[in-house]
Length: 344
Image (tube, rainbow, N blue to C red; front, side, top):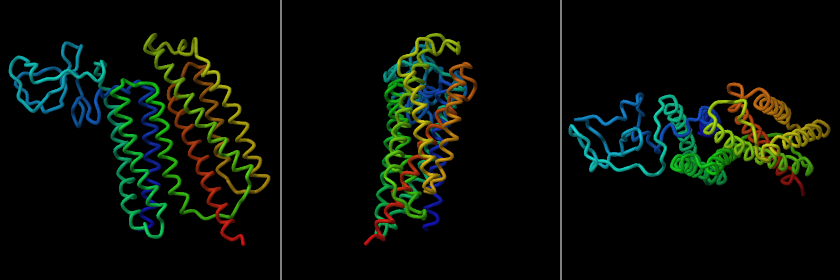
């Protein structure tokens, strides 16, 4: 059963990163409001494929919650199950008032719907390994507690997704939604690390630097999300004129860009310490490589007008960097504990 638990945890980590990738594609394509409601999409478990399906139809069986677009201006939701008459009877419908976004685009709808499906799929192995963890409660209480926190985190993340949609993509809610995904990554990594064994280590400078580097990465993610929100507003104003997306940028853009240099320097010093002291944290090498790619994609977006996929790659790599840094921190704590156990 222990093997099944470890496998499910690793599958969960992969799926969470797939959710992050899907979310990045949703942002890139502007599909965040592809489904105006949550958890269903236009009131359907499987969303419509054509706009005609959202036009009122005479003598049609409607289920409670299913939506129609009336006069291309308003969304209405069925208040109960009924069969329509020849003419629409508004007594059977309620105006959808959570937001005023009334657009149907099949591409955006299905991109957002697939994003939600992947999120739901990610919850299955998390729920399963949480149930398995109860079996280990007597010997590994931390495993059960962290598993329960992960399930609760997924539930909270789902609720956040609903509030993001209901608010018509309020910027601060998108940022919180992104940070919560990183919290879930951290919880899953903490379950993975306890299955690893490696040599002991104790170097406070390295520990403090890795904590500092994680902090810098989180700041970068928040700033990057806000820059992305600025770009989204530009798209609404001027459309897909990419050359002008970064005109009149706010100060946080320049902070975000300059911070990348600090991030690189700090992580290079971590690499130096790791090699000099032979600490064995080989994942630092991958972090340096990914930071290089991160800077490259940032340059491409700024100087080459946002090449295709540069935005989601930029975001996803930032979350992978966070995951590696957090894993190294967990590994350090685990290895330092092994020293404390053998000390008299």
